[in-house]
Length: 145
Image (cartoon, rainbow, N blue to C red; front, side, top):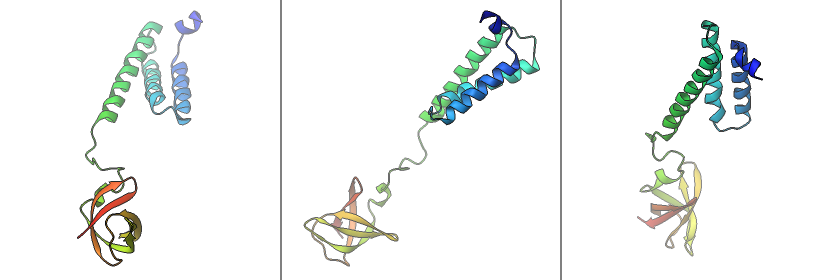
């Protein structure tokens, strides 16, 4: 094993990078992507500078793995410029909608765009306008306008 490590070539690094990227496809959640990129980068550097010793190659792999992992962490942790993204229904709060099925005993339906959403609120006749005041899961909370 020590003999293998002492004679690492750029092919070994490219193979490791390829294996890590293939494993990433099976659902590692991004962890192996950056390690695979780091291994491939060490392979390219080793191809360009073939006199690098095995210790330098391993240190380079460790450093690049750390740098790419930190880059990934910072890019994932960055707050979104669209805070309501993937929060379906939040954009409807404050809008006025048309009641399609009368709200009886606190439950009914309202028209949203070309679709219909469940609504909860005070009893209201069909055809009336209501204002969305909140959201409970996928049910809009409404009040008469």
